[in-house]
Image 1 (cartoon, rainbow, N blue to C red):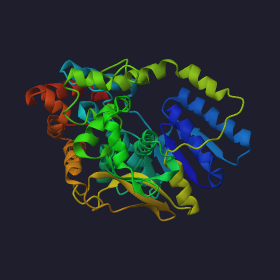
Image 2 (tube, rainbow, N blue to C red; image 1 turned 180 degrees about the vertical axis):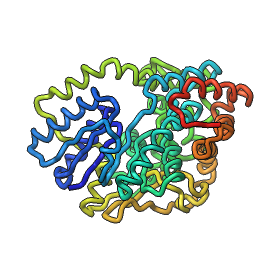
Image 3 (cartoon, rainbow, N blue to C red; image 1 turned 120 degrees about the horizontal axis):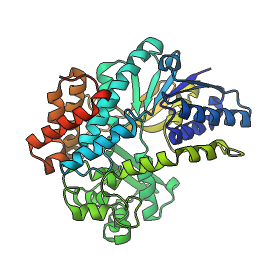
Image 4 (spheres, one colour; image 1 turned 90 degrees about the horizontal axis):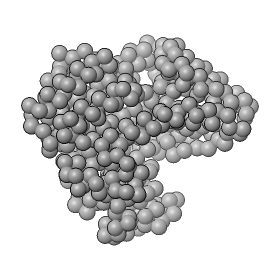
Length: 436
């Protein structure tokens, strides 16, 4: 019986989805699923939900539940992380302190001052997880869903020899959206994506083996379609390729949008899901979810019959492929071992990966188009310095990472950036690794 451990299982919506995904594969229904969270109330709710499904379907699945990380990790075959270190309290600091300095983040979980500090908090937790895994389950595959994806994975790859793959859903969602706007059935579309997480590029996009990019480019001048994904269409227009992350996210990774109110207003236009908040949009969404958490979860737990459906998240596909040998292809975040040859070696890249009993096997992509690699490198510079700061414990690397951040650099001079980072260090010191 294999053991699948979920760290941060109190992330109810995602945990629910992953549990259903796992149990949708017949060969995984005899697994042990161990749910771990430091919040015993949330843990109890998701445990009740999991046990309900097992009883409903009469599966042989064993559900374990614990607040003890070491107990959860002992003898695990797969470890899935979905934590949010510092919770909403820390997230408030990520958004509101930079806003005082004029840095208007929409999400703040991947790059920029918010992404850097979310990483530093997560690194503290991941350091402990890595040490426990090295002792308790050294051969397990670590599947990470926690942002900032590239920095988190790069950090673990620096401090440990554990096997890790980082997973996101942006490639799946973007390819589905592209298919929809050109009117193509999704099962008739093929594509190739590569780059870095939240800034990967759809390098090939075909409909019935014919290049579909011309159809996509026609949509640049279609105002209704353009307004659904403003920054992505801007990059398609100026750089020739479609990027895999949402307009909201992508607007934070470059200096071209969020320093201008007219661009912010366009991206957050009325009629889009993010219309109610131009700054801290995702924070507000998380706070709203927190306010309705108990009632929402009770509805899920009290459902008469839970339908077992499978999402397009890659985690369960990886586990099933490695257990059964039924091969699959996913997009994974892995170390750049000459996979993308014009991005820095050792950086964390997102590429297609074959998965079977031999594990996660990344594909060599070669060179990205020059302009796309150049954009990726502006983000990799920030990632590398932040990771170096976490590994060495030196604050100077964190200051330098923030100074080089494309959005921050478009707003602040170097002294103001340093002052902002000092204020964030002070506000978040209880969650951070020790830095000097």
